[in-house]
Image 1 (tube, helix red, strand yellow):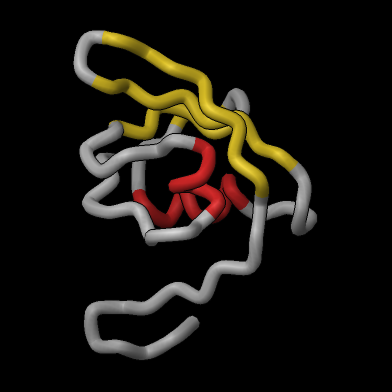
Image 2 (cartoon, helix red, strand yellow):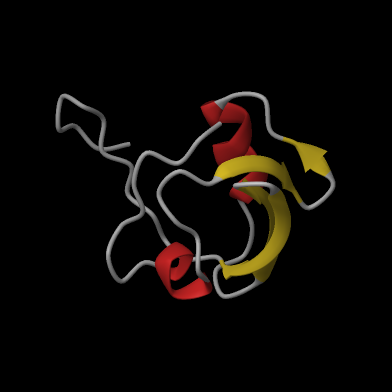
Length: 79
């Protein structure tokens, strides 16, 4: 899964995730689909989750603080 964008001001942006980063693992769980990634991010608000990303030739582990996220689908609806 490759990040197509990172929301300005989000905890992902604050942690250093960038557009184009390829998500490899959230914790120890491999990320194979977007929905698999979303499920893996669930947890108590304010806790930190480690995310492994591939950026260019490097693999990085980035700690991201969990926050409330309202997911907007391309149609503009919320889930």
